Amino acid sequence: MSTKHLNAHESQHLPEGNWKALFVSDVHIVSGTDERAKLLLEVLEEAEKAGVQGFFLLGDIFDFCLGTHARFHKKFEPIFSKLEQLKVDGKHVVFVEGNHEFGMQCYPTTVPIEGIKTHISYLKTLDVAVAHGDLFAAPARYLWFRRTIKSDWLRRLVWFIPGWALDAYAWLHSGSSRKMDHYRKINKEEILASAAKYLSNTSFKPSAMVFGHFHYPFDDSRAIGSTNTKLLSMHSWDKPSCLLLDEAKQFHRVMLSYD
Image (cartoon, rainbow, N blue to C red; front, side, top):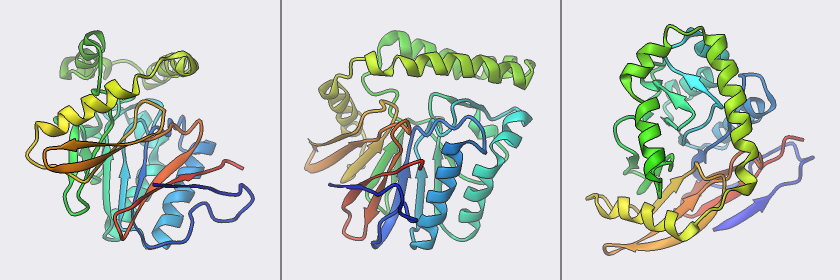
């Protein structure tokens, strides 16, 4: 897989090429008008102009989003407005719910929302699987915490809490959590083995799986059945990047810039 480091002063963020699909993850947008949102919208626009047909957002696109609250519908309207337009134009658009997003099945959008009932989603026309990735190598305490905060009863309960209060709490919590990213130890082999195990238990064995969550880029492969599957992890947008899939089914990691 090639890595393309782009000049921050170039007018284009995406390199020229025959691209089939664009993958982004862990953007952690705070509002629909912050620098991350603007860069994402720019990348989506450029990818559309370049003829990309598949747009796949793999979770934690927002720093916090509750799909049942009108506050967040308004806050992130620019992003979903663009995704809706891509869908209307015949593009394949998928949004995967991450661990910073809740109740996205209730978000007022026609964009398909994945990651609610099953952790891994399959893009069979591309021979690719996608996931947010937070269940890979997850400790038991995290699985318990995730089941609780993703539960229907808690989603109904927090509906009565003002959106601004949820927003303020999430901003404080996620900010302090991200400050710890540098100190967290990433066991790459454990994560890759867990991802491979998930795939080995399914009938569809894709040629590649793309996931986020760990804020650390992996580029590895595992033999899963008779298939040699690429396992690709994405960086967070503290160091913005995306993955492009070309016509030859080769992935290219593109490093972006806020400048």
